Amino acid sequence: MMREWRLHVLSVSSLTVAFVCLGAALLVVINLRVVEQRWSHAGRASVYLKDGASQEEVDALRTALGRVRGVSRVRYVSSGDARTEFGERELGTRSELAALPAEAFPASLEVDVAPDMPEADLADLVSKSKQLPAVDDVETYQSWTERLARLVRGGVAASILLAVVVFASVLAVVGSTMRLALQRRSTEVEVLKLVGATDAFVKKPFVVEGSVQGALGAAGSIALLGALFVLVRGRLDAELAALLGVEPTFLTWYVAATLVALGALLGAAAALASMRKLVAV
Image (cartoon, rainbow, N blue to C red; front, side, top):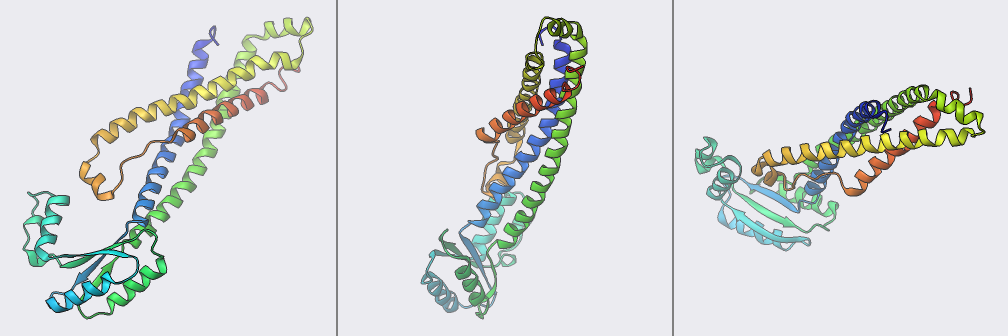
């Protein structure tokens, strides 16, 4: 590998590009999965009140919700408070929407739900709350969770398809590199065979080289993804992260180690398959 470093650098570079595509897909799926888990356990429901709801109806509804098993707190948010929170947290004080009158923002009861509350109980709470005359609508953010779940499933399917393409690319690149390296060392191989070297003895160095190429390609892709991840996270809007409720997550150490091990295994397999006939001849 030291004598033919240019050949191996080209091979490792090609493998790095292939693994970057796979690693980027995994990175997107992992972060979508984190957001999905965060919103599926948001522990919150918003009960929007009608404009004509009286204070007595609001107090009675607040007391009734507070007595429900699994509800830890019920907080009343007036129209003015909703306008203030909407303007300061999400849109900024200079936004035109933040300048709308308070009547444009509905009052609500923010219900904090325990994470271990069964979904059936939460669905029953929503159904009964919607039937009350003072309630306009109830939002539990389950629709967002379902959309994210579908998006995650699509990302997993795309990652599997991309993994097949990457595996085929690794086998093709390493196999071609090993065949070319074997042709360049044909004289050495012939001498070794003449002095009694077995096929296994001749194959081992090439298999090791293929394994090293695959591992270096996967490791290089992780390093490149890490640099891109730091760059993107540094420019990510803090308000967007606060809205989603999660911070961007990089590949875990065991996922990275699995990629490196997989690259080494594929490289060794490709090198072994490419020399199966050439060495025997």
